[in-house]
Length: 117
Image (cartoon, rainbow, N blue to C red):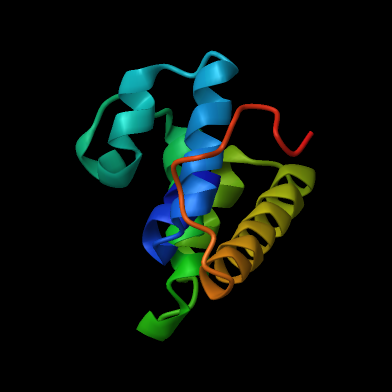
């Protein structure tokens, strides 16, 4: 979710940090490379795909569509209420950090794993 929202928002600083942290934590490089084209892949579970769809709709506010009922229903089919609350909080927070980093000109490329721990 962090990587996909950061891609949509064009936040190089967040993309740098979250891709490096995910790789360091053992995430498969193929999955990292395919996040932007998740609909056209087979490497994400149905629950992950539902979360990615929710992320996109919660990030692309200018589209004016909001989150369609079908997207909420799919997310709810794969995540319980506590997980949905966590997803919404994560989507909102990464969008806030994306905007902050873009506003202050935080560019990607220099992040070191664990830098902000």
